[in-house]
Image (cartoon, rainbow, N blue to C red; front, side, top):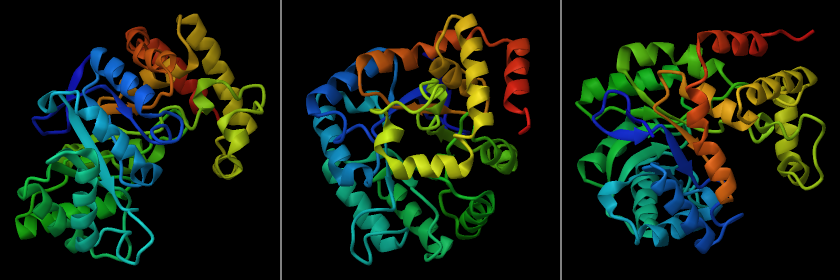
Length: 322
């Protein structure tokens, strides 16, 4: 396992990390989640991602119990604040919710602090200055070591950096954007100036595009699959074009390429992300030891992605709709 600096910070995170979204509290119980985290750690993963919204707080409660068997300094732990409840002040990035939401997350996680604290989404109803001041307070107060954002626009991040300079606040260290073979523009184009100017780190999510990049939908949608059981998710992916005939044809070609390289489609998808120098870590999820091992073994496939192979992948991915 390789460990990358999180942007320009001194913190090092495993290039593959483990997230609890969808799985903890929904698809895995305390015992199975604990085994997965231990296996992940034993394989070199040191960064574990969570959020107050995951399973309405149950994900943090489960991880908190598991963390009791780890040495705190061996881990990089995160949570994200935005969706905390139904009350008028339990959602968003107001100073009140950021302070109270972080306190509640730490209680559930049984921690004194998290390493990384994210603003889970942009909040159009709260001035960025208020959010910046609150995050600065949380870091200076020791509840978090670094703060960052998730799915913020480049312009909003630039505004946050400017406010930090003007008010002498601690600036964001990282962004958590969606990034995969089928979702690229924001990470590669919109954020380009952020890497050059601010050297921001990234903890990317959805490497498999909700399972599309595993290849399991190449011949249709299986009756027991996630998309079959979640019509809203399926509709969202169809609306975004990720389930279009052209997208699936690309995945079929990439699946054949992965097999030629001695790996799976999922491993190729993760390995391809790891080749991007602006990626600090790829957040992966798993509900079984088999899935976890497959994700981590993408590290071996990464070594096979030479310049010619990367060009072949780019040719497939950039093919226009016919």
